[in-house]
Length: 125
Image (tube, rainbow, N blue to C red; front, side, top):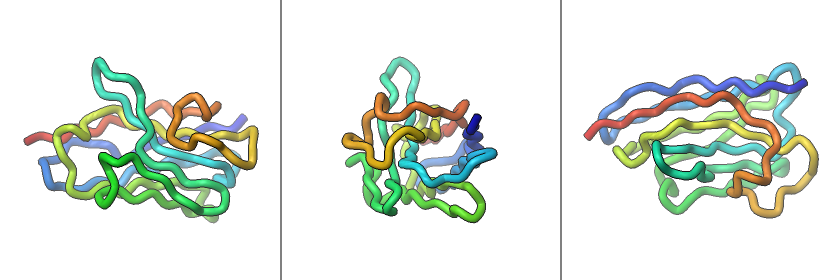
């Protein structure tokens, strides 16, 4: 059974940076994978995804500030977050679709069947 474990969350001031990591164990990261977030009282939303061919997708709200990447040798997915804003405050989750080679709607939460436990990101003004 593959598990996803996130780390790297924390508290920063607006304008700061954080890098989130997600380790897939015991398997690899050769899936369509992504980062999602959920703020209190809001629905979970897609932030950034990376397909098996390496193509990436981003929510409009994070384009130009966040970068998703993966290191298959380390079975690790990353999310580099720069120029953080208070509205980025949320629980961030790593997810993977382990069933298919291609995900049609990459930023939709219901496309993914495997989720991590989340890591909290708090951005203060």
